[in-house]
Structure formats: structure tokens, C-alpha cells
Length: 112
Image 1 (spheres, one colour):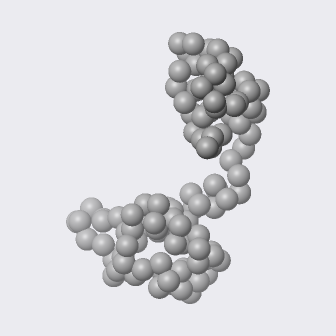
Image 2 (cartoon, one colour):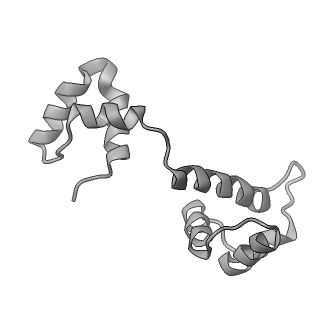
């Protein structure tokens, strides 16, 4: 299975100063990872997707509930699981899908 393009491009960006983009792409092709140099350049030049921007926004909102404050305390909402947190965000006027809340909470290891 081929790794995701952002992951491959991040690897190439880490090593491009030493080897260059095109030689790294040729080496990856030999090892079964098909990617063209222009794909990396296009990926770098492209703007973040709407989903990535929205995920960043929701992650920042959720981090306000799940990360401790300066005193080391978390708000009561930090005990909410994904379903209650989704309902809480809906009541706050944040139109977010339940699955988005589940995915972001799972990715960050936040549990109720």
C-alpha cells in the first residue's frame, strides 16, 4: 500500500536539501513508492483543503475543553464523550458533524 501523498512529500521536504527532489523521487520509485517530483511541488504550492482548515478550527475549540488550564484544571465539559461533546458544540452554535468530533477526539486521544 502506498503512503499518503502528504506523508511522502513531508519526507522529501526533510531530505531535499541533501539529495534534491528528483533523485529522492527516483529512489522511492525503485522501492515501490510511485511519486513524481511535480506532485511534490504541486502539493507544496496547493492551499490546505477545507476539511484540513475546519479540522484545525474544531481541534482548537476542543483543545480548550480537554487541555488543562494554567492551574492544571479542566472544565466539566472535558468529561464529555464524543456524543455529548457534539451536542454541546451544536448548542454553542458550532455546526460540526458528529463523526468529525469523533475522529478529532480519537486522533488526539481525548476521552470523556
